[in-house]
Each structure stands twice: as structure tokens, then as C-alpha cells.
Length: 584
Image (cartoon, rainbow, N blue to C red; front, side):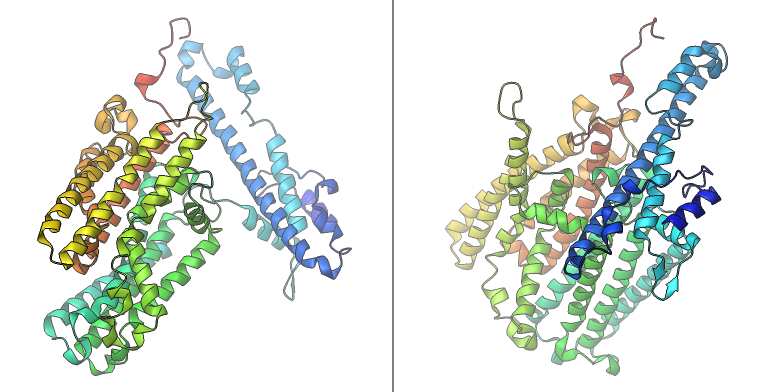
């Protein structure tokens, strides 16, 4: 530590930004105690010591990140204020530095730090403390030099504030994967048109149910990753601060370019497995007949790869999604953050995927895949069909509990701090799902019993509640989630109130209504059992949710719709106060 301090002070290198400011002397009272007590602690306390070191190290990184944010905040506000005065130079009578009032305002502003080295000194001290305390002098059998330790420590501390640029290698990989996808699609088309099915392998259509549902499960997850990659790309282009809104770990969050590469790679894997299954079903060529008795091995291996990749991404991103899902499962018992109900809204569009997860777990867990002929009468198909709609409505139940919890936390019920009734109206929106599921299940049961009288009653009830649910949700989407109310500039014709092209808002209103009608089918038992229809509904709902994300986060970014930030990001010209002549 003393050697590093002396070396860095002599070099005058300062922070990683190359400011050239000398490093302040190391205050050893600020060094974590674990650095000095490490040799004094016995073997029995080594595990606790390791946990403490990890916690302190994470706090150092978070503290350094906050210092960088304060520095950027001061620099940007100072620059903005200087440009504002420069714009009105004529009215001020010359250079801004010559006006005493302006000079005083610049130098006494709380965010002014261009000539103040306090923040810079704190940054340098934090860098020095981190390197001396947490970057070891040895890496395996290699002894690291002072510069190597400094470089390693700065890589751990440094935070990427803006989205990484698309590198040439990243674009090449994306193009390479995209080209492979086109080749595999042409191969599948050729196989389907040129070769008949081998009845000995394919069997009946019902025996394809596991393949359809497993490929649909992995395919919808990949489609959702494409939608999120597109969302990230648009957010970066339009400067929507989704990292702040969704509370991503800025240092470890995945970028739009990485999300595109990930989506393209798993699309290639999905098409490769589908091509292998098709070649086995067609029994051509002869060397592809490797897993004809166990066709489920193709989609099952793909699912394993998806799970491994998902866990790897969560490990890299500090488990952001896993922690959020854990909060969603405990809905009603924990406070609700924006990311919690945002992901819960995503789950309401993935109801068919949840049903497929239950089916695949049942199918693989019970060992039915050993006998391909038993799938028609297997318990996962014969007895679990009635459970599927109730699994599909679980996300709506979680959102209902979240709305009730947000209503409870919005005030203390007194006249001074009343609770917001808007959360209860939002809860009612999710409550409309329950009669749709109920009458859909009753209609399917009466249809199986061939009771025409009850069929008509249950069908009419289902249609009535489905129309109410669709219209209610559509109204809430447009008015509250998108912020397209007449009071706020309907369709956002005020240019200061939108970030996208003007034609996108009426287009989104029409598309959202059309695809909302398909959403109701994802909760109905007879539509879930119709595999082609349910596959189309699942894909269309994922696409609708991807478009919904664009307007929902734009509304939160512009208007602070959920009141999760201290102040709104911006206001329109019509809302800004008009200065009086004296103020001008």
C-alpha cells in the first residue's frame, strides 16, 4: 500500500480520466479494517472475512459510481448555464465573465465544480484506496507491477455511462448469424416441400405436441429477447434513460448490441434444432436418423442451453431479473418498485409461455419422453388441461396484489395524506381477467359434455366479459400507460411531448387494440389447447408487448407517470411559466 501510494503520487497520474492532478496522501484511517486485521484473524473467521471484503468492495464501487455521477451532473449543469448566458450575450452587454452578477452566479452555484477539486480529490482517494485494499499484488504465480494493479483496479471501478458503440466485430457476428438464419430457413423450406413425412417416425399429429410446445416455449423466449433488443436500441437512439428507470446495474447491464448478438445466436441454435428434428421426421438424409426414437432431445437440449445462458446473464448482471421475479412472487407483502410491476406486466403477455413451462416440466419430469406413444394419454395432457387457464392468469393476480399494495402505500388514509384511488381502478382492470378465465373453462367443460344449452350461456358470458376486459385494458393502455389523454395532448401532437415520429402514436393505438383481442384467447382453455392458434396468439402478444414497452417507458421518462422520481424530466413549452418583463 505504501509502495503504491508513493508510486502514484510521484507519477501524478491522478484518476483514470488522465486529469494530471496529483494524488492526495493516503489516509490509512479510511482503509477498510479487513485490510489490516486480515493477518490477525484466525482460520475460523476466514469465511466471514471474505464475505465482509466482498461487501466492502461492492460499496466502494457503488460509492465511486455515485461520485462520477455527481461530477457529470456538475459539469453538464455548468456547461448548460454557460451556454445559456452566452446565448443572451448581447442582452448582458458582452462576455459573461465581465458581468459581475453572472460571474458570481457561476462560481457560487452548488453544482459548479470546474475550478473546485473536491470531487476530483474524492475520486482520486477512492481509486487509491480501492487499488491498495482490493487489488492483490499477485495473480496466480505472476507478480503484478504497480501499473498493472492500477489498470486492473480501474477496470473494476470504471463505469460505462453510455451504451457501448457497436464494434466492427459485433456487427460482423450479427451479420454472420443473420446469414446462417437465412440459409437454415431455406433448408427448412426445401425439406418441407421436397420430402414427405416418414410415418414410422412422425406417427400421429398428437405425438407432436411435446415438440410443438417445447419449440414454442424456447421460440417465444427468443422472440422476447429480440423485442427487448429492439427496445434498447430505440431507447438509446431517442435518449430514453431506461437504465435509470428500470434500476439496471449500470456497470453490468447488457447493452443493445450484446442483446442483438445474443438473440441472433439463439435464433441460429433454434433453427438448427428445428432442422435436425425435421430431417429426422423426413428420414433424410440417412445419417440424420440419429435421434429418431427421441425427437424430444432436440428441443430439450435447446431449452437447457437457454436456461444456462439465462443464469449466466443473471450472474453477470447481479441477478436483476431473478430478484425482480422474487419480488413479484411476493406481491402484496413487499413494497412495489417500477421494475417490479413493469416485469409483471411483461408476464401478463407471457401467459402461454407459463403454461408451456408447466407442461414441459411435467412431461420431462414424469419420464414420459421415454415412450413417445404414451403422450396422447399422458397426465400432462389428459388431466392438466383444466389447470392451464389458471396458470395463465397468475400474472394478472400478481398485478392485482401489486396495485392493492401500491394503493396502501400511497398514503396513510388521513385527510392530509389520502390514498390514491387510481391504483384501485388499475386493480379492477386486472380483476376483469378472472370471469374471462372462469367462463372460458366452463364453456370448454360444457362443450366436452355436449351440452348445447349451457354452451350458449357460457359462450355469451365469456364474450361479454372478454369485451369488457379488452376495452378496459385498451383504455388504460392509451390514457394512462401511453399518456395519450386529451388533457395531455392527445396523440402527442405537441412536438415537445413526444420522442418518436408522430405517425407512430395513432399506429400504436390501432395495433394495440387489434392485438388486445388476441390477448383474451391466451387465457381461454379451448384456445390454449388449439396449438396453432395459441402459437400465433403467443407470438402476437410478445410483439404487442414489445411495442407497448416503447410508449410506456417514454411516458415515464417524459412525465414521471409513476412518481418514482423526485422530479419530472422535462415539461412542455405551454406548461412553462411566462417570465414577466422585469424578470426578462
